[in-house]
Image 1 (cartoon, rainbow, N blue to C red):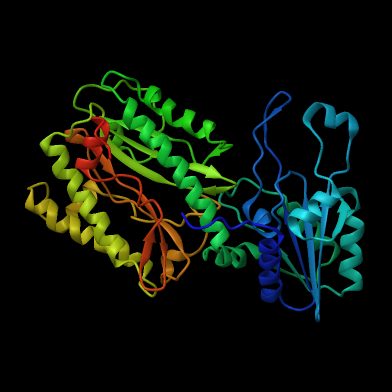
Image 2: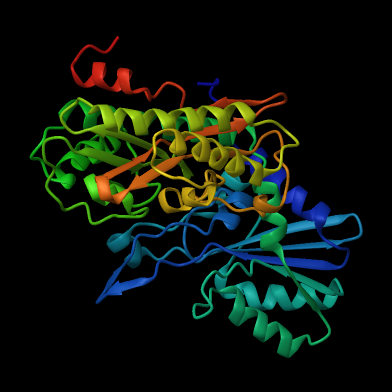
Length: 422
């Protein structure tokens, strides 16, 4: 672990400064924190802040807005928050107060949501705003966030303005992690490690997938984790050949492998680790053979990581390794057949989202990028699904494995599960 680096208001102030530097003159930017969607009746799903808003402010309450404007050398930000409601506070807790907003975010100007329209109109007119930056990230054509309705209203009232997608700009910033961000990811990984070890220690043939998974859940709760990085995958046998299997409701049996793709989230930063181990603590010879091919592939990919390498080259390295090794053991005859047993990419970005933002598939690796290395082989006819996933950060000359302390070799796993861990 690196030394603890506090994520104080200076981090968020620096992020806003980067956005200001990227904005055109005579421009405004509007970002929303989001709202918890309705679940049923008077119950909502748990709230989690929209990550670009959080990255710019450090604020994690719903129904917040920031308005930024840039005119010449003047750059100013205003945060809009809910007013304190004493009756509401008795039922669901108090809203964040202005002084707390200022301390966390470093934003001096704090107003209330019901004043937003008036302030926005004043900025548009008095600062002669020509461009409006908004977070238009939308991965589902049928779902609109808060940005689209406001954009339509702005278009009606100020038809001369140009809209620019702030998401693409902020995504580029988020691809390169600061020390304080890496510290949060390492904390999430360390807690994930505890959960994985608890599952290994308590795994027995005949247990349900969810029973073993429960040991992971307990360790995370005990460590103060408020949310998971994603829904845990607990997949025995043939279930491990389904990439995003998450029913976690099958009974294990003697001789099964079980694949756990899990992650803790710490202060909105995520770990994402996969380990595959024999439920009874002992690999069969065939399982170990396939496992070692996957592990060696992971090592080759990690060894190749360095600034300037094409991101897509990582997956090519793995597929070349598989083509060679799977022919040796008679599983395939032609290189193209690798796709039958390996059908995903070996890496994705990691940070404020488990599949973090950035158009990295089109570019080169850069120092400060954090991503997964997760080779897998999936052989349904043998009920073998193996994936080994670790998290790395690109350094000046190569990379550092952030999850290096989590055991991964077959021998280490067998020794650990037999109670012989060092």
